[in-house]
Image (tube, rainbow, N blue to C red; front, side, top):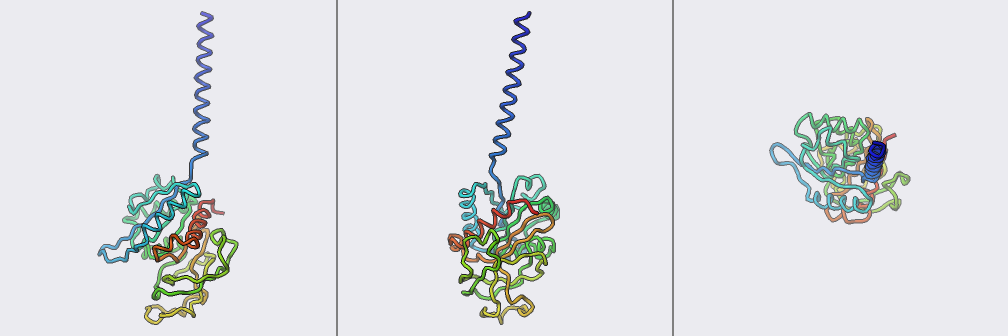
Length: 265
């Protein structure tokens, strides 16, 4: 009887010890888990006439490479069905990479996106992401503005106005760049521009159907903000697919994503 009792105590202790080890292993695995981001690329209009950028594959490939370098996992999708409260909880950042037009197919998905931002989620918008959800003011506010127009692609000078922001790390004070120079309206008052260009020095503005004089002379091309609980970064550059291998653009995007992963203040 006594040996049986002692054996039972030893067995019970062993079970408890195994349980503790399993718990510690689980906690260690959780602590070691890499952050996960979602790269979203949907381009949709009901009539099928919306412009779809050919840079999407390049932008996704570049961000996957960034994840391998910086230690975050990258999921990519153009399926609006990924926007559920439960699914979005796993992501540290949502990257709208050259998405355009209708990003979501119903208001339940829009609600999930809004809940994600309100819960402190990170958001990064690249280039034509500013043309997504053109009829939803909340999305404009998250991104920081809404696409209005752009002149023909051209060479222009980009100036860094906030060199202390993380995504500007390693950039020269100014650089020349060939791209579509985006004009965005409905700018959120809370944005902090980090890249600008002098709109008065741009060419071929006349054909655009907007009054360019209503836009800032220092036209914002990238900015960050903390809005509605979230942490957001937007970059208007990136039309040309080969530029996603350019160390300059690559570095801006990578550092912008890493910044957006941090908790909003």
